[in-house]
Length: 234
Image 1 (tube, rainbow, N blue to C red):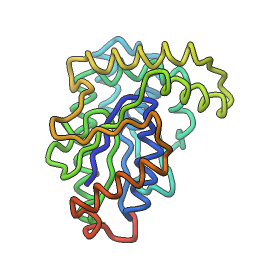
Image 2: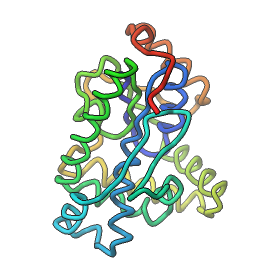
Image 3: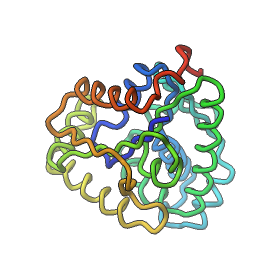
Image 4: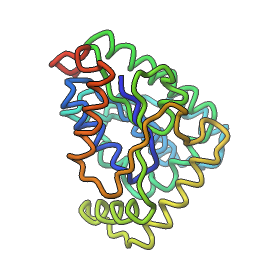
């Protein structure tokens, strides 16, 4: 298993998916799980700052997430919401929702269950998030913490949103990145931080391919390639 943590804009999602493909492993985007709950909160008209109401809604939220790096499967009550969870409203509200202790307890338990199922099934999985190496899977044989400068992450965020048809200036993206960093790193429940034994990789000056090569070599040195099957869970 590879635990991949780091703040937004470091390339976690792209890197995690491509690394899983390269290793023949499963893939889990835990951030998407928090975004699905956040989308459910917004659609229900619940205030993201109302912890009790958010927790109650999370208990009855019906969502599913796939573990194939080749095909994203993100469903809320049976509806494909892969695009909806990346919208600006969800991005703005996901930090307060994910800071609710009960939401984290609920999703961490689900994440551990998924990880165990994939490991039992195909032998390997790449899991990305903000607390994988510290909380979800502290015994992971390879923990990686991706970093990048705030300016680089803001530029990436602006480019991604523009490509998706959502205009976001670099200045606004920087403010959003810094706000998210502060909320994630100062929350009481599972704050964003690197595990003590995590390998730090700064992606500021690296291409995606360069990061993938570096992480593949790390995985090989840890003996993680032999445990993965060619067929990924669907």
